[in-house]
Length: 106
Image (tube, rainbow, N blue to C red):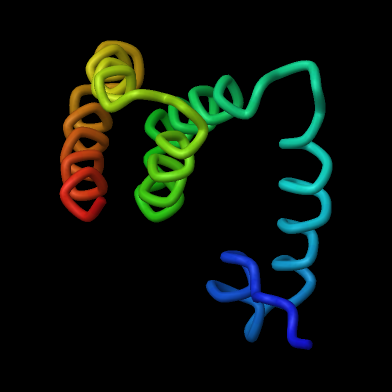
């Protein structure tokens, strides 16, 4: 029986298999599983960091994960609005347009 490929394996496993393995085993298998923060809280933190750092590719996938982890559409919109004042207007506007696309694809 073949095991399903993870998102990291699909994205970069053929080019950087070790990076995909570390993503699966360490980042999502350990860091995201630690009990000190809920997956929902980790999603909010990650989305905020990706907006502030201007990482649109990862933001797109993490917005979807945040929704799966219980963050609401209204909360994600508020994160984009709030960060426009702290990370810069372009960062907030870019996040809002990416969020709009993610929500339209659901």
